[in-house]
Length: 195
Image (tube, rainbow, N blue to C red):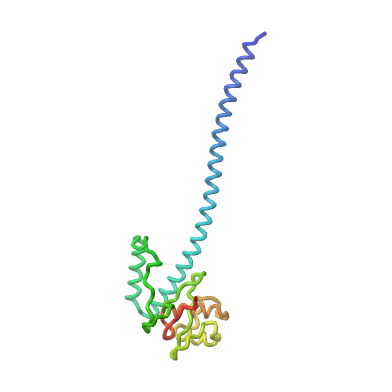
């Protein structure tokens, strides 16, 4: 009795339920896609953080090198450096193969396997050792703190050392010493300590 009324209820309910089910499936697919996008974004963040570390290290070296060049009064060299940076920005060195770059020549024309330019260690810091006037080449770690301070203060003031860290730490004076060596402002030469 009154089956048509019940049929009408069933039909409308089923039709509406089908539409809702379709919308739910669509939303679930969107949710899955958004979760995948979120995972990709977290991976991108990790890559960005790695790149930030490399870029900060490079910027730190650039700032130190530019400061040392300015202190040395080498404005033409600094201008050439900025032109090289512009060339890098323009992609001129985009395909450069570092392995094919010429090896630095020995200052005495010798055949030693070590070049006269320092190379960065795993932390992006240049490891250098002194080559003094009598041909000896002691490692920077062999120098006393007093020797380091004396050598550094031949080039920069005591107050300027603070930009490398706390002045009561040996590491600060070593950083300053390496920076000044890299800029060619200390000693008669420098030598790479990495093997």
